[in-house]
Every structure is written in C-alpha cells, then in structure tokens.
Length: 114
Length: 109
Image 1 (cartoon, each protein chain N blue to C red):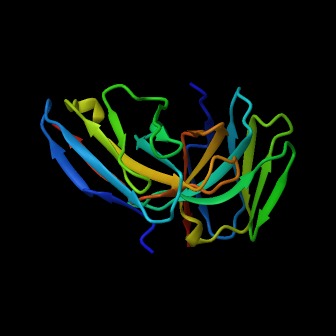
Image 2: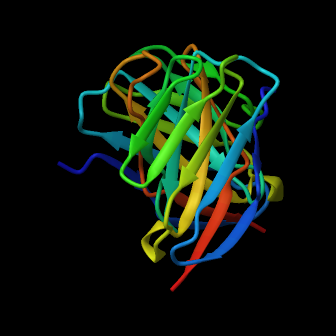
C-alpha cells in the first residue's frame, strides 16, 4: 500500500518553462489537494478536488492549473514557471469531506525555478 | 485569507522540559487538526479537535481547542529528542484547510 505518491521528487526549471507535477493515491479517497510550502508561511492550498470530475480553487491558485484525471490521480500544471513558484509542493488526499477525516500527504516535490 | 498564526516560530529546549505551542486565528473553524512534519517528508496528522473547549491527550501531548473554535494549543510534557520536528495546526472550513505558519521544535538530549 503506497499511500500518496508524487513525481518527480526534484525539478529545476528555467523561467517560462512548463511542467506537470503528478500525484496518485491508492486508498480509494474521494478528495485530493495540492499545497505549496514556503519558509515561514506554512502550507497554502492551491487547488483541491472534492470528488472525481470536480476541481476548486484554494488560497493561491494563480499560475497553476489542475486535472483530476480519475479517482486516483490529480495533477498540477505550471504553464509558464516563475521564480516565485520555487517551493515544495505537496499532494494530499482524504476519504470524505468531514472535518474529522484524516488527510494523508505525499513526500513532496521540490521545485526550483531559475 | 484565513491566517492562523503559530507561536513561537522556533523553540529549542532541553530533554525533559515542558512546552506549549499556540495556534491563533480571528476566524472560526468547524474543526482543527495538528500535524507533525519531519525534514524531507509530508506532514502527518496527530489529532483532530472538533468541539469548542475540547481537550485530547495523546501520550505526553495534550491538545486543546478554544471555546470559540478560533484557537488551539499543543502542550508537550517531558519533551524527548524524538519530538523534534515542525508542528503545524490547520483550521478546517468546509473542504478547505488553512495551515498555520508552523513551529519548529528542537529537543536537545
């Protein structure tokens, strides 16, 4: 049981390049999330998907797009990377939408935009 | 933006000491969670508190949710080096999570 997996683990981009961060979960969870983590700012929600076929903006969606490809996979795309998008990106999932549901995180993708 | 402020931002203590971490907001949340994160890994859930005034204990860790459901605290008794890590609180509203700024704890043997 792998839980939440993310690829790649590390990536270096030049300003203006595009890339897609991949996330998959094998726990049959309905909800999936993308966060970015920056020093001194905690984790900030970029986008989330409450169920297959739906996506919603979080706190900091500008510069990103997402696709909920199926129940297992939720990808994050940077169309034109900027240095301000240098961060650690975490994908997470949880079974339902109840306040007490546990959220499971992947190991993160470390992105550097030059 | 529903910002949660954590204090202190950094904490370095000797093994065996007690400590308290605070998580404060001007917003009301339906529930609040505490996570611990090790370097190079994603956060791992420690506890969820749902009811205003609720207190939960997890071995040497005691979590409290404020009566107004705007703030929370984490108290660690007799800290051990294994408690070292980044502690994050997260307020939950609907399907959105709002994370705190984090408290980096180092417990020195």
